[in-house]
Image (cartoon, rainbow, N blue to C red):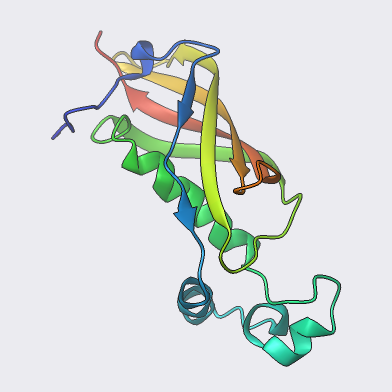
Length: 152
């Protein structure tokens, strides 16, 4: 297994530790590409005239696009590179505010748990994820759990 230079194992994380990403600005091209990839052509995302008449008054990004960007931001930290064995699950997903074109989102992960797995050399890392926009308003929160290699 090839490890990144910043890679960490499950037993390198500490409960309460916070990992923060750099920001990523969401643009219309991101939304168009995601619509094509996912097949989600809801007019609130792709139709300016329709969206102007709806509750947000403008087109907004897909919630799942924001989730995908968040996952990518966490991976860009490098701490999971080569040590993550599996994505075990996601719970309590909440989209609390829309992401508008031009918004910059940042992802923060707070480690909520670490434990050894039943198989030697592996462990589970749980974290609470919060994605905020440039005004520090939460746009997405969720809990995720990863199976990771260990140093034991």
